Image 1 (cartoon, rainbow, N blue to C red):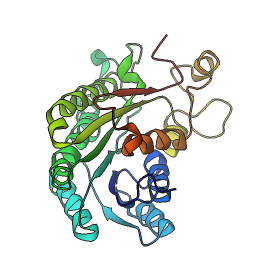
Image 2: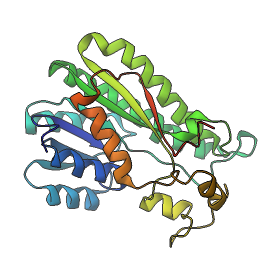
Image 3: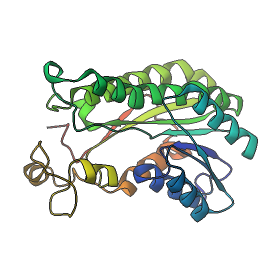
Length: 257
């Protein structure tokens, strides 16, 4: 129960879904957790549930000053920062092949997924270095590892996160900072339910990628937020001290065969 004892973790998108599950998992293992989310109601709710070892800071990851303020608030509250889980992100139903794409979808998706991840890293990494090292975990997607997704901007943004992760791992290894990313499959979160629905589960709309057939072929493809939170917990802990620059596929094998 003390795998992250003494650690301070900043989790973007920590109010809901994977970020929320990760905030709970990190705190159970002894970390102090800073929940950075644009949704104040959800962020305050999970911070209150965790208690004195967590607090919420309203954060828009697409705005540099907002991200900088979140990092500085974490250090001011807990004295240091040694773990970043850059989890905020998402996709839009209007994400299509590039020949059919509206530019507003491109700008929104690149801004949220890629720019948001970059800004979190830009401002958190110097503080992690100052703390003597630690871990950065970026959220990518199984879509980044294959070529069959019609959501081409989301795929591109998540693919860029894989490359950013590998480049950062090489740059900051000398500072004792490990940088990895998780390439998640479809996860049963409120956002995914709203956008796609999930086979055999209520809510959402029909999945244009024929999710029912995909789940039959890849029965572990649809996961729970806790599945990804457990991987993030491992990557944040000393148990993964030999892992850096990795893009860990957590998509039920869909990207492997």
